[in-house]
Structure formats: C-alpha cells, structure tokens
Image (cartoon, rainbow, N blue to C red; front, side, top):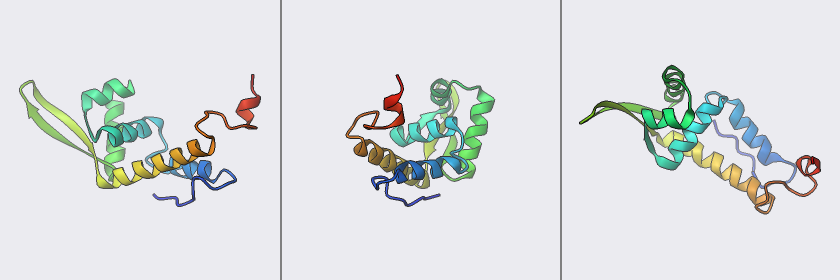
Amino acid sequence: MAPTADPTAPGGSGLRTLGEYLRQEPLRNSVRVLILLSLGINRRLSFTELLELTQVSKGSLSHHLDQLVSAGLVRSRMVFTIGGPRVQVEITPQGVAVYAELSRTLAGLSDRTGGRATPPGSVAELTP
C-alpha cells in the first residue's frame, strides 16, 4: 500500500498518487480515511471520540474499525476505567507510515499551489 510517485512532480502525479491510495482498501471509504487521519494526528482516541468525530452509528464505526484493524493500520483494545470498560483505538506503525505518506503527498500538492487552495489556470479557478 505504498504508491511511490513524487507528489511535487509536474503533470499531476501527486494527485495520481493520492488517487492510488484512496482507491485501495481500506482507504476507499471517507470514514476510514477520516479515522486514519485523526489517529495519525492524535495517536489514540476512544470509540466515543471517534463516534463524535465521524457522526456514524456504533455499528458502522465498528465495521470501519474492523476494516482498518484487518489491514493492520489500527488496533483497538478494551481499557477499564472508573466509568466502566472503554474501547481505545490507536494507530499502528504501519498506519503511521501510511498516514505519513498521505501527509507528504498532500503537502506536496499544497507546495505546488504556493499554499493557495486553487492553482492558477485550474478548472476550479474558472468556476464562478
């Protein structure tokens, strides 16, 4: 799960690289991408925090987490607190590597636009 194109190369290869990542399982779903990015930033979140973040049902979140666990990108464990048992989800070293590569690709795309959301001459710039 490691496209290797240079995100700063001309011809949109950064977008192609990003597209290659997002077409692969388990990142083919926006909820799973959001979970991975959130864990890449925070390293560990509770199931409840992920529920609030994703705004999906408990069953749906469990399904998405199962997909990420199966891919080796995250792990979950039960922790016992004063308030009762809680599920903690954390990113794995493999997940950190995927998060880092996605971040580099996105940063490379941002660098190419000079920090602007819309690069000069792009289709988006032509849209009123």
